[in-house]
Length: 243
Image 1 (cartoon, rainbow, N blue to C red):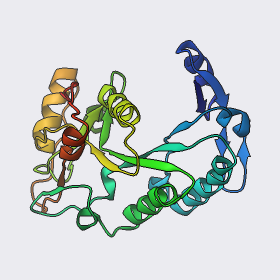
Image 2 (cartoon, rainbow, N blue to C red):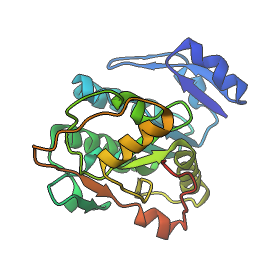
Image 3 (cartoon, one colour):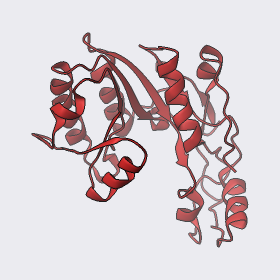
Image 4 (cartoon, rainbow, N blue to C red):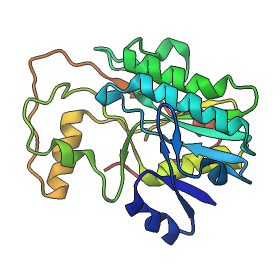
């Protein structure tokens, strides 16, 4: 099994997990690293490339993916698991429940770019692709409460949270591959959605962190990401609670 990273420090980590490591940097106009060797003799690619949308690098993201696609079409890769985000979905004051349908999609610039990125692979006739739209990630060394600890005037205190544990992320990807489920879009979010205020205050207390404070004067907007499709279609069960 091959795996890639953009930082040399992580090469040894991949190797320690039994993964053949490659140092690859995908740029707008070039790919730095042994991309052909990385893709050689593999049939399935799990593609998780940071979009850079928070730093305003969305257009560059699309260019990178289109460049990568040229290499994929020349390789032995036949199937792609494209890792996307539940931030493609709209939010409103009713905390709408969103599903994997066009009606749930937002019209923001970020959502538009992510959907375009998904379609680069979904519409390619040379590849079978399934998209997984993950919600916020938590894990052993990663918890969003650490980033909000001590902060003040956090917006949307009543909005539902949408999170998923790293263990379930891996299980979702495995379920898609093992069931040979291609040409699909799946949401992946733990099916419990407490309010932001309740969740983060409780989480900070458990972690021994200073809790954040919230702004109760502005209107609340949010959404609940439904994972009903993957639960029913693939008989998937979430096993790692987000608390």
